[in-house]
Amino acid sequence: MKSNKVPAQDDWRRQGQEKYLKGIKLTARGYSPYRSGWDHDHCEFCGKKFSMESDDLHKGYSTEDCYHWVCEKCFDDFKDEFGWLVSE
Image (cartoon, one colour):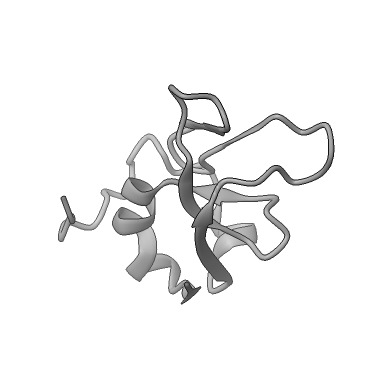
């Protein structure tokens, strides 16, 4: 479900992410670890876990290097405010 509502300024998910995520390019992709031996990551906003495990998230949006991940819900909620450039 797509959200048309902008998150409030006091939304609990806000933690200063604009310092490193504002206006950057994100890629929609299946989860892949940042580097060998890395087994999971977390959404930069809500903290949901990305991994290859069955109960975790398996797709979302990441920076080109796969270091920062954003889940689909948080991406939808913050995409306009953060002005992300998206590649598929």
